[in-house]
Image (tube, rainbow over all chains, first blue to last red; front, side, top):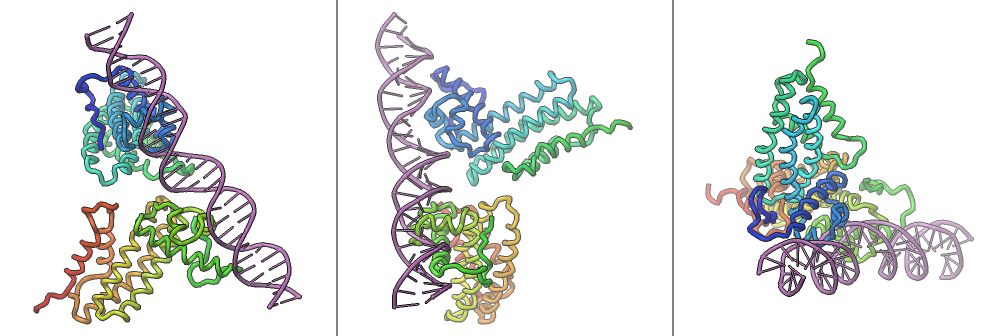
Amino acid sequence: MVSTAGRPGDAPARSKRADALRNQQTLLAAAAEVFVTSGVDAPIRQIAARAGVGVGTIYRNFPTRADLVVAVYRHQVEACAEAGPALLAASASPLAALRQWVDLFVDFLVTKHGLANALQADSGFEALHTYFLDRLVPVCTQLLDAAVDAGEVRPGTQAYELMRGIGNLCIGRDGDPRYDPRRLIELLLQGLRRPRSS
Amino acid sequence: MVSTAGRPGDAPARSKRADALRNQQTLLAAAAEVFVTSGVDAPIRQIAARAGVGVGTIYRNFPTRADLVVAVYRHQVEACAEAGPALLAASASPLAALRQWVDLFVDFLVTKHGLANALQADSGFEALHTYFLDRLVPVCTQLLDAAVDAGEVRPGTQAYELMRGIGNLCIGRDGDPRYDPRRLIELLLQGLRRPRSS
DNA sequence: TCGTTAGCGGAACAAGGTTCCGCTTCGAGC
DNA sequence: GCTCGAAGCGGAACCTTGTTCCGCTAACGA
């Protein structure tokens, strides 16, 4: 059920046309965006349109929806992980970097929660989950520590706990205008700040 | 979102053609059967066909799928509750009655689990759940006690626990031939029997 | 530069949801 | 018992989405 395309890093056995590879990347990015705006149940056509490809191309690369969701998941974990240090280097302050990173992370959670649905009882889900933790907790820790070192954030919060809290805040929203997780998460981040005085 | 038709027992505000009322009952029974065999996501057409009505009739009575599922749920709880004493009176032994009742209960669980999905974050779900407990635990207790009194079943098991166990056994099966909850439940009931000797 | 073929787009088909309207039948009033 | 207004019905028609298939395009090895 899981895509047979190699894990990031290993060269595909051989032969794969350059445009096909490019398409796959475009597709992953487009799917990620559409998942965020329309959920993981978004019509295939919508994703195809966003990516500017035909639906056939999606089905060729990802025979089932679960394949696509898993691939996006990996892609997002990777992107999120790489974005951490990059944001830290580029941002004016570590807290700003953390905030931007959390924003990416929230987008990613849509896919993650959709994944849980799409895979249901499928095994291999746990493997993906530990992969996710192993990869992202250190990144979040790095951002958090930097913000603490810079004196922007009070010490004493664990990355795992923060990520889990954010994850839980993102549960169960479905376009309900009365519940916007991002608002709450912003509050959470505010709460993280080191008190002005003291 | 919940059907506006009155709860069992109260006369509808006024005027409701007899055939319409009859149809509604037929529909509930048909939907329950179809839910058992095809799950709560069964096509509307299939339910209409089973009931021998047009799809329009379903939409008129139950505008959304959730309405239908909720109505079937109530209907099933009621049927299950009423079947308890009836089976006890009609069966040769209390254990046989219990066994038949559990069979009804398992059918009902399909709807119940489907309901949880259909309603998701919808409130009112808890209300239905307590209604379910209040109504059925006493019935199950009665059957269980009768079987104990008849010496067919060892004492010491609580109805709530038994029902919950059965409920949990019914989770996550989806036509997988390798997992048939009814087989396990049968084992459970066997385990309930008073040891031959002693 | 050429030929092979991987890969592409999207038309065509399938399946299910939802709406709508002309016909049927109920049942209140007489 | 008969009449007639309208409640209620069935199912065709239409819409959305999933999935397959095939003729065309263009990448790339020779």
